[in-house]
Amino acid sequence: MNFEKHEEFWNIISEIEEVDYDDEMINRLLRFKAIQSHLHNVKRILDIGAATGAFSIPLAKMGYDVVHLDLSDEMIRIAKENAEGLDNIEFIKRNAVNLDIFETDEFDLVLCFDGAVSFSGRRAGDVISEACRVGKKVMMSVSSKACMTATWLNYSMTKLGRIHPSVKAMMTEGYFNKADYDDAEQLTSISELKAYTTSYAITMTNM
Image (cartoon, rainbow, N blue to C red):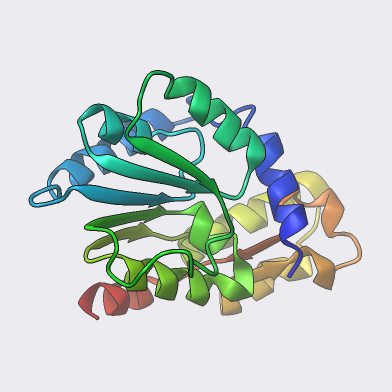
């Protein structure tokens, strides 16, 4: 898996990470409200795929000891600017498929939303396992297979004027890898993505 391509993608995305497209602001506010309901007895927090600090920085401002982890130099650069003056937040550049720098149950709470899992493609399971290993409590979200199938169909028809073979792969496997297709560069800038069904999410919740 080429994580350099992934980093390049997120470096570019950092330029628009804080732009409120569609309902992103509402989405983040709802997630932060959910986070606040799980902060009892929490002191140390790991935010995986923390991007520009939508959650890590407000939590640090609330007094929690926060580790902000991301794959992208640009995301971390912006987050550091946003966190100026805070001394209880640590910034680490790292791929989340391997968190061996942390001990088991080192964190009272681990946050791992969307990109860190799903954009790790075939290694998504490793990110899930590592997040669960290092956290006493874990809050996680992943890309929906149903939603991403619709998104891929929209990309396909809008950009190519036809149904691209990757639409079927997303629908059946919930998986996309740009390297599998000669013409995928025209379809999306995403290198690899793994999406999940609701039943899988429920299984993970009950583990």
